[in-house]
Length: 131
Image 1 (cartoon, one colour):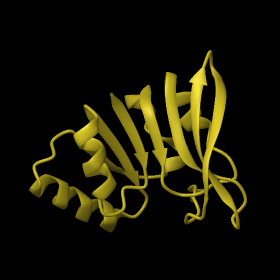
Image 2: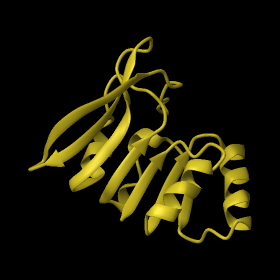
Image 3: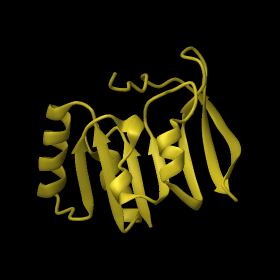
Image 4: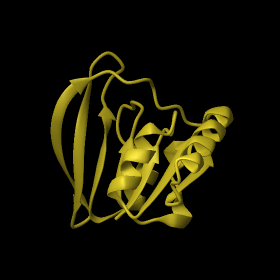
């Protein structure tokens, strides 16, 4: 399985994903966080995690399609570029909705269409796109 993670942060979740998936591609918008996560993941021996500094809303098109995409910051709705990079039958998980009351959704791509399943209410930091 090939996973795209939006929001590397400390690298903790990328390490967990690396135990479950063949390849993990993780995008972080803050260069210093990405650098530190890369050092940490390398020191722990992870060789199947690939990091990039950039705008997570545009995904990682040259590595698509992804079987799973996890978004770790909130948006009103999932970014269209991420949906385009999700493989048929794949699942996108993320917090979507207004800032004060998001819902964590699992959205499966079936015949190119979203099949959404709400999981739980939540509040995440906002997903920020480069302007």
